[in-house]
Image 1 (cartoon, rainbow, N blue to C red):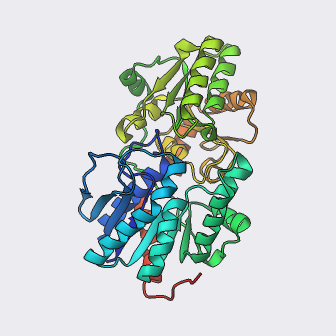
Image 2: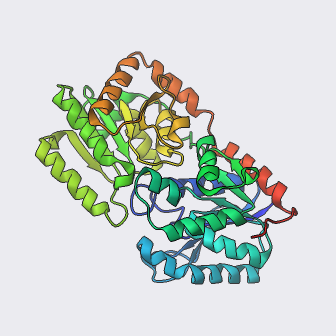
Image 3: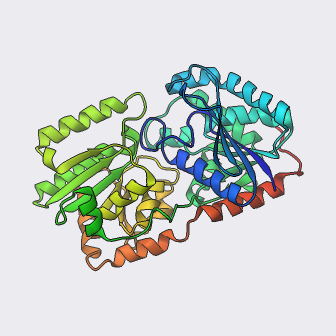
Length: 405
C-alpha cells in the first residue's frame, strides 16, 4: 500500500465547511483521505496552523493524520497574506520528510498547495497529483478574477503535474480549453457523498426537529456567504415567490467568507428588512453533516445559484437526501443536476426565472417522484469509488517516469 502526502495549505480538512475558507474542498480532502486510509494507505495531510490550540499532529482515524504546520502567525489569514508563507510551509514539510522518509506520491489541493507540491516533487523526485478545486481563468470568465499572476502559476503547475484530477467531464474540458492541459494527464475522479449522513427521511419529522412550519414552501441555501456563491439571488428568489402570493421561506446556512463576506451579509440583512420578509428568512450558522442533512430533508428545494462551480457538492448532498435542486447551469452542476429528474438548471441570473423553476420543481415533485429520482442519482457517487480511482492512479504513477517542466 502507498504512503501519500496530501497538501492542503490554506485550509484544514478539519475546519467547519460554510464559513471562512471552509467549503467543499475541506470535505473533499477529509473524506478522500479517510476512504484511502480505509483501503490500507498511509495518509498524512499537511495544513497551515491557523490556531495556537491546534495540535502538531492529530490522528483522525487509523492511517489518516493531519499535521498542523507552523508557517506564519497561527491565525486565519487573508488570501493576500497566505502567499507570503508558502516557502516556510514547504520547508517544514520537506524537513518532515527528511526525518520520516519520502512518501510515494504528493496530492496537492488548490493552487497555493500546488506551489508547494511543485517544488517538493522536484526535491523528492516523486509524482505530483493536483486537484485545483477552482481556477483563476474560469472564475474570471464567469465572475471576476483574482490576479493574472495566479493564472500563470496555475499554468506552470498544469505543465509539471503528473496527473490533474477533474471532478467531471465539464471541468476536464476546462483544463484543456483554458490552460492547454495535456488531456492524457487529466483524470476524471468524481467526488462522493457521505451516505451515512445524507440520506432520505421524513420531511415533516425534519421540520419538527428544526422548528419549521410544516406547510410552507421551504427553500434552502447552503454555502459561504460571498458573491461567487450567489446567495443574494437565492434571497431575491424567495422575495419573488412571496410577491406572487406563495407561502415560502428561506433558510440560509453558512457564514461570511473572504474579504467581502461581511459586506455580503450586511447587504442580505438590509434587503431582508427592506423587502419585509424578516419573518420568512432564517440565517443559520454552518452545520455539521448530521445537522445539515436534517436541513436538507426539511426543505422542498435546495438553491445552488453559484456563478462558478467546479463540482457542486451541496447539490449532490441535497439529492442524496431526496431534496430536488434548482442550480445555475455552470461547471460541475451541469452533470449533477438532470432537468426534470432531480431538479432544474437555470442559465439566467433573473429572480423571476429562478422562481419559475422553483414552482415547476415543487409541482413536479408533488408525488415525490423527483425526490426518489434524486436519491437514485446520488447513489452513483461514493467516496469509496473516488478512493479506488485515486488508488489505481497512484499505482500507475509510482515507478513511472515523471513529467518534467
